[in-house]
Amino acid sequence: MSAVDKSPNPQGQEQLWNSIRSALNSARKGSSIDQIVRGDVLPLSFAQQRFWFIEQLAPASSVNNLRLACHLTGQLDLIALEQSLGEISRRHEILRTSFRTIDGTLTQTIDPDPNLTLEIIDLQHRLEIDTLAERLQQDAAKQQLTQAAQQPFDLTQAPLLRVKLIRLSPINHQMIVVMHHIISDGLSIEIFCQELTALYTAFSTNQPSPLSDLRIQYADFAVWQHQRLESGTLTAQLEYWKQQLGGSLPILQLPTDRAHPSVQTSKGAYQFLELPHNLTEALKSLSKQAGVTLFMTLLAAFQTLLYRYSGQEDIIVGTPSAGRNRPELDGLIGCFINTLVLRTNLEHDPSFQELLKRVQQVTTDAYAHQEIPFEKVIEVLNPARDLSRSPLFQVMFVFETSSSDTWALPGLTCRHIEVPSTSSNFEITLNLQATATGIRGGIEYNTDLFDPTTIDRMIGHFQTLLAGIVANPAQSISALPLLTPREQQQILVEWNDTNTDYPQHLCLHQLFEAQVQRTPNAIAVVCGQDRLTYDQLNCRSNQLADRLHRLGVTADVLVGILMERSIDLVVGLLGILKAGGAYLPLDPTYPPARLSYM
Image (tube, helix red, strand yellow):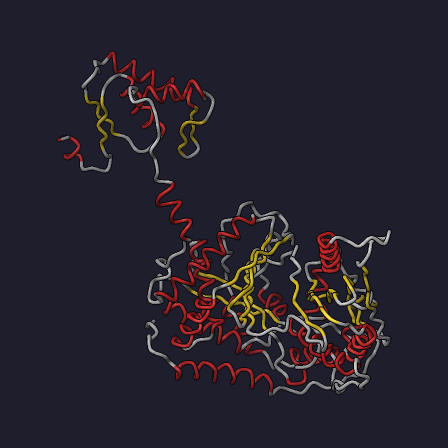
């Protein structure tokens, strides 16, 4: 595979985008999505079926709760806000949908009443009317946000959406919106924000809703998805995934702080990261020169990191796809997200430029075959089930080029609030987002496998790797820098600072005997499964020294020692010194003639 030219390659980038556009346009030419008659039984989409199944395994979990929180400063029109929320609920059936099994069939039920209520928590005063100290008030508000984010949903009860408003003062509020993934995805939250802004703007000035009614609803999409798959239209796409992921799939063996539990857990945490603006610009420039997207460059870097951590050359990473390949779906709230499995071959230690070409091909092919639901791929492949790990892949990569993570309500200054994650669907998920100031994001990780310090080091290694990539993309991926400056200082300088103060008049074996007196039962030497304490090692070396004495070994006598690395080698070296002699190490791999001469 040839290396990418260092000169800009607009022609290659245009070919890439033409390929992706062609795949998307092909998907959009399928049969249109029409309204269906709302009967007693409405099927779930494939993604909804998966989330229902996950919920049955862990019914009290918040792992699939999506949330968005914001601090609002200014005069808030509470009536307009409640009207806006009610109108959004009226417009989108999915926000009034619940799920249950009827006569053995899993179905979704739509409540005709948009019964979405706004929960208001007043933290302006204590019960005894004393003003809260600012720190205590902020702690209480944080607790309320965390509680709202972590509270599980009952999928049989609509709405699967909660909105909580925390009043800190007449002009300071915090608001959080939490939706279960079975009714929402990342773009749905963005649509929710856009509609809330438009409706609040209108209602706060006594204007009617500026939004036109939706032509279809999520239930229409769910029926269409089943019909499209059953029609055989997507057979060729399914064949691609069977070829790409068939056979024995590698299990990513990351070095963890603890062994995998017998059953995978969802306990998690989140560590933030932010790349400097200059590094972001350098990554964009490299992507342009190579004729690839920034997503592909960051994915290739992440897979390089996994390769360096695991030593494996067959790397599989999951990534979300918006799943909105039809124009009818652009304004809908619902769970349209699909998961793509990106499998990249990193064998023969390619340069990063060469790896980019491989990642480009894998990514382009995956997006050209993205209409097959991930759940159907798992069903057809039927991989060997290991309850301790996720099927097909164990790590996730998420990259967003734009995101509306706040509201823009008139008369209010809105600031995004991070609500820490306490769950994780995968061993590791790298979340990155392109912003005006650079790339920010973080790593969501399973706390039953990793410690915070381990993830912190991983973030440092990723940033070092990215800097090394932009400095020399022609470098082989095994030679790219990984250690942070702090780690280099520790390994090259601090750990090599072996100067120590010890009695100058004592020999090595005498210093060893002093240590025996201090810690006789401590382990002194380990070789494979064999080990000796200081006392045991001392006894065995004394026995050898006595034997050597009887053989005539005294001061200034050389004793050859021909032995592989082992515990007996250490016994031999100490025994010779204790006898007063000097040892001459002989390498067993030397030719016999060389050993005889020595």
